Length: 495
Image 1 (cartoon, one colour):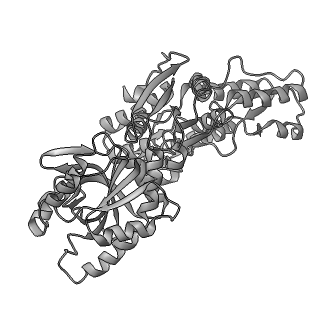
Image 2 (cartoon, rainbow, N blue to C red):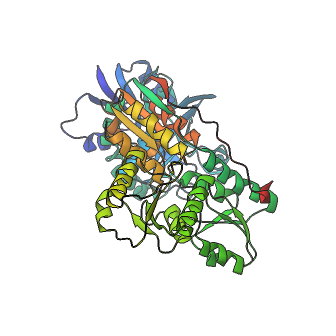
Image 3 (tube, rainbow, N blue to C red):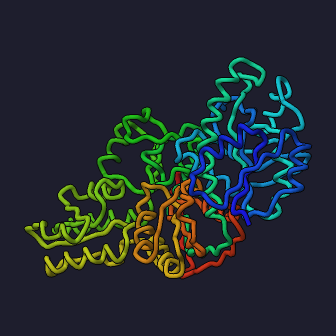
């Protein structure tokens, strides 16, 4: 049976796809269906069996922002009142983007005639990105096979099909289409049924939920703009959604107008930042996670007792900068090898960034205790319960998985630590969303562990599972190591 069947309408499309395929590619068959829905339906009735079905070729843009040569990956195909979903579209779009193509993901519409003028503008209002004349009948017979639809824009609302400029557009589209074939072969190689092991707990912790709710309530009570110093939590999706509601994220307070409503992020700030806010009469709402505030209080307490404070953490992280700011002469160590370089003229006390890997932090703490006998640690563990629970859960799924995916942004310390913890047991990767998943990772991976950092929204985990279902049947199992019931109160300014 053919592993991948690629359907094209035109001979030029078939030629472009074949030209891009590696000579060593096996199990791939490219066929012509002919132009229009009637011929496509006839071809659909006689399609050979295949492991995966793809439709590739040219299309007309409905969205006015698309340009000739842009690639549209269909999230769904609309035809004759029916909708045919393409759940793996984000995976394919991400791979095409990494191949250097300009890619958009969204609905594709199949019509029985060439769409122009007023009709094109009307159809654009439905939300569809592009239109063709063949995909619908072919999508209708996918019959459980993984389905991918990749169309390259030839004409646009500004450059209609019957114009001199179309020649240049067709050349751009042809060159782009030659680069689609290799990506489709990787997509088909990743197509398979698999098991997904969900680590639990995963995603948002109480501190993150509290911080996001503070910004949302501040916007509701005061209206936009509400200024936020640094990212409220380290996740690009959260930040974008809040920006759309009117939050303005700044690096420093000199970017904030005098007297403006300003939120301090969950990672905390140094006393100098609070002083600057006071000098500008800012209406401050503090979203510092209570567990980070606890570390700040410990630093002040140790320093007040005459101890040399040593912080275990990552240089440059916002939480670390805030904690160091509480005790200006405190010292920072990132790993055990740096402990030998420390010198102290008074008794030592050590603290820990809340989002570190517990085992690595303890290794550094042990080195501090060995070098400075009598060194005092925090009365309670600094690494927060959410970090500890997520690391314990990812260890469990990593022991059973061929691959672990951690959903989270690159600047999220707790997400990075999850990758490191899982990576000691099996290959593990950090992804912001399904589009970051390389198809090569999935080839041969029958069991995938899946978790998310404490700052990653739960719907992103659901989106990964949905995308994987577009490659074949998925069985989802959960591995729970703890039940989290912690909740934090909100500051009075937003109650």
